[in-house]
Image (tube, rainbow, N blue to C red; front, side, top):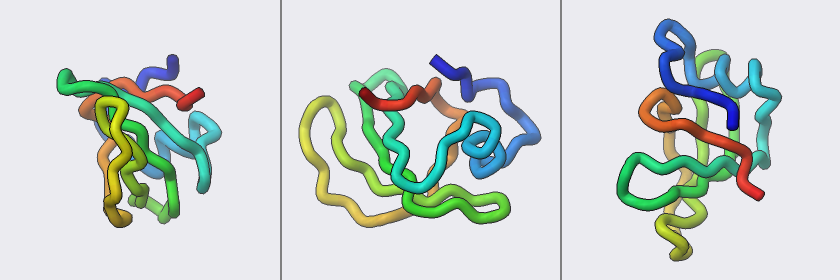
Length: 78
């Protein structure tokens, strides 16, 4: 698992670049309500755009939105 907590001062995009995560990478993280899987759709200079694929094992039909990574530990989804 690559830690994404305690990365104050780092943008979501810089966390992705540092970990080698790019467009198409699927990440899974749990904020205490079940695991959420997201797929990165774009990386800007500071911002990460992703779409939610599933939450708590159920598919989610959600559009693309910006995501913060500091609120949970993320790892590449298997």
